[in-house]
Length: 150
Image (cartoon, rainbow, N blue to C red; front, side):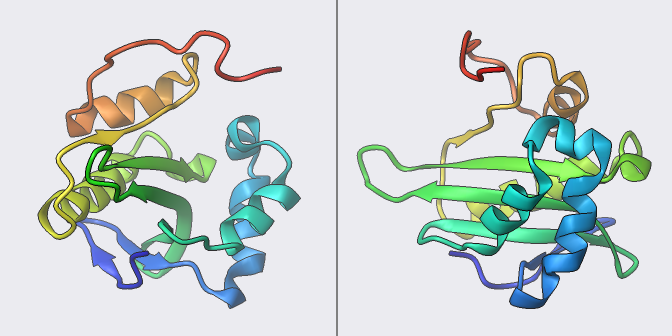
C-alpha cells in the first residue's frame, strides 16, 4: 500500500483517509462518475476499505478534491504488475487533469515500486477514460467482451 502524497505537474494525489467520506460521496455521486462506478454509497464504502495491496488517492488541484484514483499491486514475482483506475468529477474532465494523475501514479509505480507492467480496464465504451490513458502512453492489447454486466 502506498501511503505517501504524490505530486504531479498539476495535481496532488493524497491517500484517502477516514475523514474523506463526504468528499468521496461528492465525487462518486457526480453523474459522469456514477455512470461508470455504480452505486455511490457502495463506491464510497469500497474506497474507504483499504485492503492489502490497494492504494487509493483523492486527486486534488489547488487544494480542491477533483477526483479519485486507485491502484492494485500484484507482488507475486511470477505475475508482478499494477493496475490503475481513475474517476474525475464532470467539471474537471477533458482538461488534462486525468492524464496528469495517471502519469503521476504510473511513474511512481514504475520508478519507486519497480513495476514493469501496468494494466487498465476501462469499459470499452468509456471513450473519455480511454483517451486519458492513451495520452499517457497506454495502448490497447485486447478487448474483454462481456467483462461488465448490465
